[in-house]
Length: 293
Ligand SMILES: [Zn+2]
Image 1: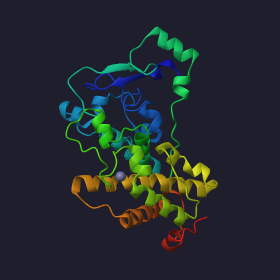
Image 2: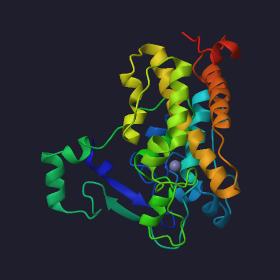
Image 3: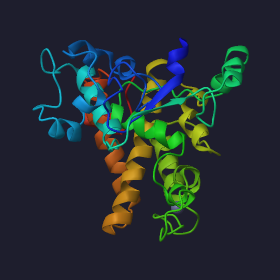
Image 4: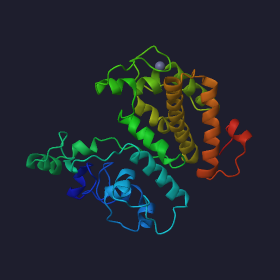
């Protein structure tokens, strides 16, 4: 990997960071994460400022994107989903853009950290690499990826960032501290969802001790090929549905109902598996009795 890849831009006014070419919003440049859209980009060297909503208004540029033609294919739309979700949290500020060195946890560049990086890449090889599931949309994969890094706004994460007035307990059960591990592995709602999914898909019951266990569980339940990929997607999609139910309960006061979560998993799963996993002949009945492969 080239050394320049280990610098990451931290966006201020967005004037110095190349939107597609520099790593800034993720640890990889967007041209690598969204190669199909990059192909459609007219101005490959454009700055972050030119592609952000605020920067656009400020500099009087009309549209956000400049495509050679409108994105249309499934991959292009998935990449657009992905861009939407990662750019959602970006805000430009008046300060200049800064650069961080990724080779060291402190973000400060030093010769010794380069040496460490070159001679001992263990810092990086120990980083967890999430295997993306292709039949669920990018926004779902991004969610899982952020959850795995504990970067979703659970109560526990907000309190760690010194947010005041945050209720510590789980928004669903109110029984334990709300963390990624709790919400998706030990909360009773999660446990019921996993039990239900195991009986629906006729997979042996599993018990996940950590979030990572959960997102790797498809590797250990005796499935192979397409069946394994579908099962992986169902688990990831379920986490996303649980999170949405948690948000509805927290922000709209809606009671979490297990039947609603399950039926949402099945109906969204059906739409996605048919259109994205090329199971176009699959019927709703077959899906419900899980007669898929
Ligand atoms: Zn709970």
